[in-house]
Image 1: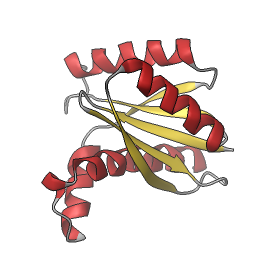
Image 2 (image 1 turned 90 degrees about the horizontal axis):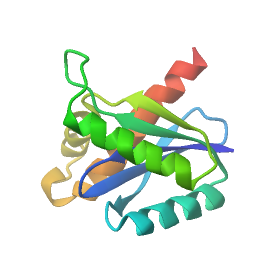
Image 3 (image 1 turned 30 degrees about the vertical axis):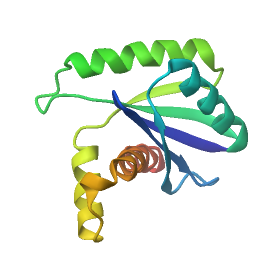
Image 4 (image 1 turned 120 degrees about the vertical axis):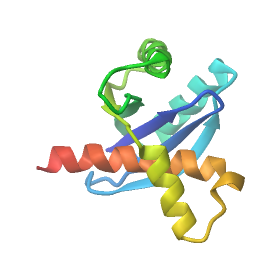
Length: 137
């Protein structure tokens, strides 16, 4: 079984998945954030296809640790997701995951501005790897 990670944004939702041993995270895809019914249907498909046992959803925090309006949107999405799927859901601190993903893609020679979907999926992989590292220690 695998863990699925989501980096929720207003335009796209980045998706990443762990390996079966839950050691490594890999970017998978991005899902357009609207329409909500399409998002839920795609997530249900991924849960079945990837044999997902847990979803890790990135929760944005300010640098001082407080929560802002983006965190409230993610919490509302989490509530909706919990009502739609039976897989457990964990909220995980995603501070700077998108910034780190942009930097990594730039260093690899990709134009991050032209490949925003890759940035979103990579940010999901970064937050998932953070979660995986925490459960291994």
